[in-house]
Length: 490
Image 1 (cartoon, rainbow, N blue to C red):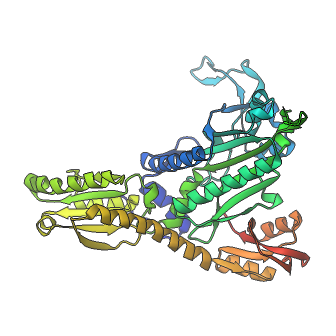
Image 2: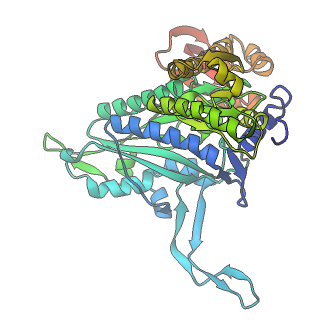
Image 3: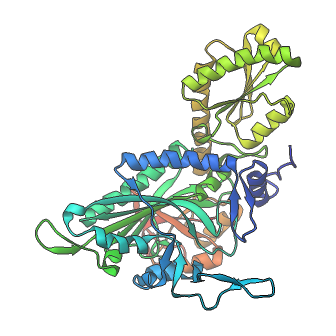
């Protein structure tokens, strides 16, 4: 295999990058800030997509597609929205290249666009401009649309999956007749996201509301799920926004109500991106490489034959292929790695590095004993079990691994959640332990900004169903009714 992975305890950032590259998930590209997602990485993303897509459709949503380019004038219609994205926008100004006669390809200055186009940083504006033509009456509502797409936000400091100039995501954009309906939709999608991240990715999350400073640009309320990575930093895993009537008013989207009046439509938007790939890596992986929860593993089980000569391979393959058939019948994805170009030791290391949850090794001696060796990727343990009932055993084992990964991450999150009753205490915890810090805040953007400037920690969320308790803000000393969660974050 390729070079060793930098130990996590030595350099967490390098450890993360090493895993992405060595486990064949992504590569640098010729375009600054953009990455190439390699087949192994993309296969995991596809599993995420397929799962989420089904969850969206099960809750009544349908997919559509909107243009990559958005007229600049659309962004001027919702002031707070454009302000939130202005510094990250890529702008198309010309539509043609030409040869300058000296062998150089240059922009044709005569081919300037009448109006500049913004490369999609998010789609609220183009979608609400479109919805104006779709909505006339309450009978046209609700609209429950999702789009799978790529977006561009011109990031200056980039990291594989976590922050790239171009990334993949889904964005839901729904339209409703009442505020209540829209809020229910926002909360429903937050719960869908939490279900996916916890039950498929095996990452425990805290559901909450963003503070006004951290809200999505143009939203009335932003709901979020926050996960905690192994280095004690938080990662926002998904957001769901109640947009009120802001975009309907900006694009003049009105509908005839049941009562015969005229009202502006109520909106939501919600999204998850390839940043979840970063969450998956940082939640579970170790110094041996990637660890993938079974539910999202492109290959859940790999079988490696150990043999001498063609006759030996033939004997082993007969049993191995029977196991393959049994596992496939249970809906388990399995690969029989009988490549003759690599030795078993190489294959073991490769599948461990790439995070395959379960590895079976079958040799001629195993055939004689009617057994097989099973290795678990999550805890690196091995056991020898009977070939009889192997499919049932592996099915249970995959469920055990999924649960173990979640339980381990949940324990870490609980142990890394602290209370601070003073500003000094907050700073000490952030510097020495990391993790979530539950502390009182006076509710003002000014205090939040000061804490962020001085500690690099932000309010990750105001937890839903938060316990109300009287206290004093750790920074200003002003009265506070509840604690919020601070953390340094990606």
